[in-house]
Image 1 (spheres, rainbow, N blue to C red):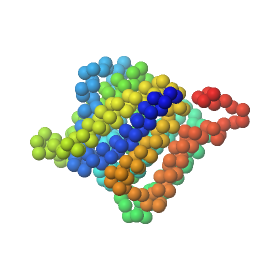
Image 2: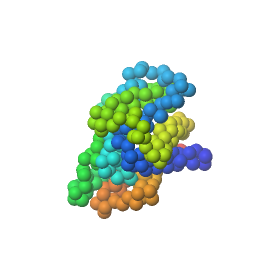
Image 3: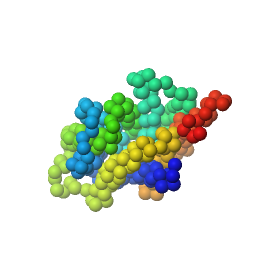
Image 4: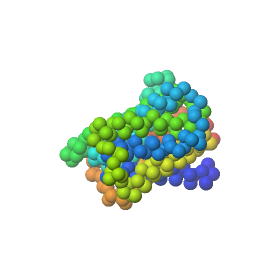
Length: 297
């Protein structure tokens, strides 16, 4: 991979990691469903006026947008608002890798490899330890479980995308964002009791900037760049950069909010990270003697 492409992949991981700080900044002033609604509204508009509609069935577009925007991000951002540490959230969200593998195996008959099973078991152990650590700390367990559910929803969204097979993924994602704002705003008014039309309810410039960063930086730019990298290089070359997301997430939350982890939570997080690493790089460990790595000849 050329150096500029390496820099771009690293920048995308940095943006995704820092996005968890932006989420925290936004939910400190606005309720989470409201934040999520504005994130996807701004991600869709004005881009839909410049990007052609995707050439796939609109059922796929709507279902992907609803699952990704309402179920996945609505749950994840609410979990952070309810006490889920942002750094840990950036790591637990990557469990979507294992959910995606499992759903694809069940629905499409794809057979996971040895490293996928090993990585999933290690990561599962890490999540159990992290959850037990939350119980021991008398910390709220619900936000952690919500984050795991959000990761599963992300896996469902990935499977929908795989079934849709959109020729232009950027167009597919941008137009799918239109499916999320209305349900999220209605949910916010019903559950959170907010009236987003009140002038006095608008956030500070800091929170507004955080929402704009999530919409245009983390959703529009970062996803488009990541998709372009995956189309340009083998997935085995690009995917390892996703392991930098929780690294940047932990670092950003530590700098911005002095976020720290207990020993038990840190151990669980380390195992989840190890499971992800085995999933990505484990093929070299489980490869039979004499086998050739097609991605890296």
